[in-house]
Amino acid sequence: MKKRLILLGPPGSGKGTLAAQLQSDFKLDHVSSGHLLRMEVEKYTRMGRYVQAFLDRGELVPDEFLLDFMAGWWNGLSADSKFMLDGFPRTLRQAEVLDLRLAERNAGIEAVLFLDCPVTLAIQRISGRRSCPKCGRVYHRSALLHPKAGQCEECVVDLIHRQDDEEEVVRKRYDIYVQETEPLIQYYRGQQKLTFIDGSSCAMETFAATKVALAK
Ligand code: ADP
Image (cartoon, rainbow, N blue to C red):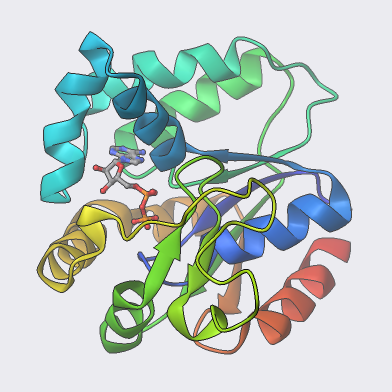
């Protein structure tokens, strides 16, 4: 079973949902750069105020900043660490630095799951989603019809609609993904770590396909 993963794919391809399932079944640490950045914004630190503008506009935070920020995470890693990265790396430079830092800690990436999904489906999913401001878990509006609708099952706090989940911003995030992040598919294919997972099917099928891929 592979225990150090990257989840790669456009916004709305289901990375967060898949990560929640993998976390609960396989106890892999879910490391979401977007969630970590939003926590910083929430704390209203200087750093948080700096990144907020990028997040709101749906633009990437500059590489040098992001790499410094993520050092707080990789400094604590060892050869036994088990994790899945969601939203990081997003540029070639981030991927190269990540490889170096993980190699220094004998904690190299074992598999990269590439979840693909078309832009129309991504927009449909994201514009209907609500997120937990505390743990970052996402819920689709249509799944909110149960008795505790509107609250996170784990944290019991009210769900929110993220500002960068508005349709116009989602389109921009998708374009940036195509430009900046898609080249990583070739990068990891070159390392023979890439596995394609259909991100347009339902969450259960995606999870089943992922389990098969990780067992190989
Ligand atoms: P999603 O996966 O739904 O697109 P995320 O929660 O991963 O959204 O990211 C939200 C925002 O956080 C991004 O639009 C970007 O502004 C910032 N961000 C997250 N990860 C990175 C990263 N690796 N590099 C640069 N910016 C990032």
